[in-house]
Length: 116
Image 1: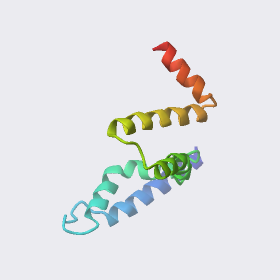
Image 2: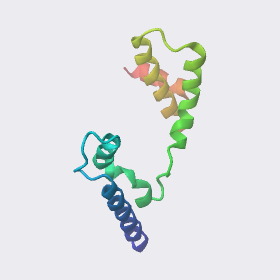
Image 3: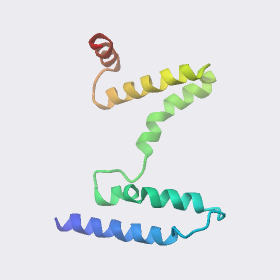
């Protein structure tokens, strides 16, 4: 409990400091206005990793999981249509989720198709 309170205090301190740099009175003509608005909008999610030690501080795992898909797209030139992209992306997401859950992606697809 004491460590949880300390992490919450630290996260709140960081949020306040960041919001001080991103006031809602910032005029839209400033180059950083769009970023400041996004920060204000998402402030509650920005320091989740401070509050919860189980949350990684970087999105490196997410970026690494996307790398094979990005490399395949670069090598092949991508899909030929929006429909192809709209098919490939969910399939890739389902396969990656199955792997993270320790399930064989082919078995997961088979179960989805047969249970439908």
